[in-house]
Image 1 (tube, rainbow, N blue to C red):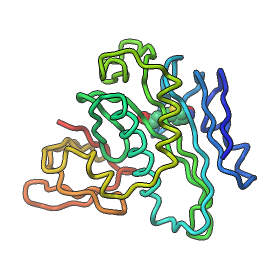
Image 2 (image 1 turned 180 degrees about the vertical axis):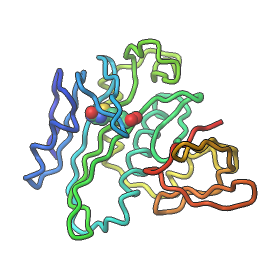
Image 3 (image 1 turned 90 degrees about the vertical axis):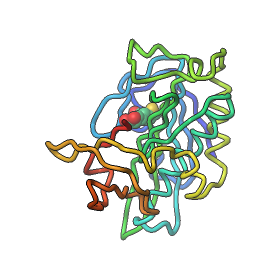
Length: 226
Ligand code: BTN
C-alpha cells in the first residue's frame, strides 16, 4: 500500500481519483484541505490540526449489496483510534463518530460500482484533533475529548494502522449507543420522533413510530440523536 502526504489539497477524495486506473491500494493524507467535501453535498471544514485522509481500496468480489461493510469498517477504525487516545466514541448511524454528543469525525465514502460489484472505494475521513473548529459548537476535537495534548501525526498513524485491521458488524454495533432510545427523524419535509430498534446488516435502520415499524435508509432520511 502506498501512502502519500500533502501539505494542502482541495479534497483528498478528489485528488486520490487519479489512482483509480491502477490496482494498488493508496492512502492520501493532507495537513489541510481548501475544498473539503462532506456528505449530501455539504462542505467540510478542514483547517490545519486535523487528520484528513482518503483511502483507496480495490476489491475483487465485493457485491454492491455489501457496501455497508465499507462504512462499518471505516467507523470502527476511527472509533478504535479515538479510544486509543483515551476518549469514548459513539457511532451515530450510519457512520459519524461522536464524543460527548459532539461530532469528532465525518466519513465520506465514494464507491466505484460495476456489474453489481464494488470495484473500488474511496473512504474519506476527517478527524478533528487540534484544529480550529471556528466556533462550531456541535463539533469537538480529540484534544478536548481526552483533555490532553495529542500529536496529529500520532493520530494519523494510528488511524492508518486501524484501517488495515479486520472487524465485524458486531464490532460496529459495540460503538452504537442509541438503539432503544428516541431519535428525531427527518423525512422530506416531515420531522418526527421514533424509537431506534436495530440496524440491519445492509445498513438500514428500523424504528418504531408510535407502534408502527419502519425501515429507513440513510440516503433518504436524516437522523438526530435526542
Ligand atoms: C461528513 O461529515 O459530512 C463527511 C466529511 C468527510 C470529510 C473527509 S476529510 C478527507 C476526505 N476529503 C474530503 O473532501 N472529504 C473527506
